[in-house]
Amino acid sequence: MSFDLVVAGVGGQPVDRVVELLAAVAEAAGQPFTSTAPRGVLELGGPRLAQVSIGECWSSIVTEDTGELLLALESGEALRAVRYCARGGAALVDRVRTPPAGLRSPESYPEADAVESAVRELVPRTVGADFGDIARAGGAPPESRHAALLGAASALASMKMLAPGWGPGLEAAGATDAEQKAFAAGAAWVKEQGVA
Image (cartoon, rainbow, N blue to C red; front, side):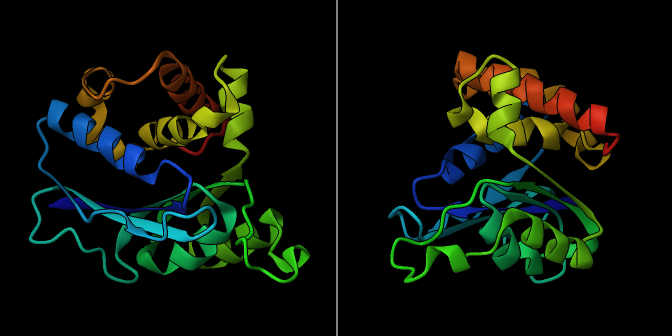
């Protein structure tokens, strides 16, 4: 049995780092791990997507409406990637907005509230927050928002298969002090919200 998830963001965001941290945590927990290489434009604002399977699986490709978790590093990308998440899954959405560089009218880029509402229609267990603020509250710079998002994911009941691997996996992946603090802040925040 596998646990499938999608990590979505834009060029300039650490989609690769989130996958690297997840891989190390899965290894530390003794769980098989496969992923697609993050795809997309590396330029600032271009879409990026990585598909991940943890546990026994035949493929790391997450097909539409089958993923159990969506980790969105950017609000607009949550809207683009929600199709991969099953209705019974969960979506964690960072409220940061990064309109594409070539957008003629950046004000037409959807607001985080509108995105969160639209994603929630498809995946009722959707939680949005400014994970940069959560990282900052934990003593880390807002650039560690990816680790706060991952910390929030770690506290979800659906991620229990990785429970023994979080600490040693983060250490094995060379998580910085800022990433460790942001991770802890994200895990504490999601528990306070009663989302777990």
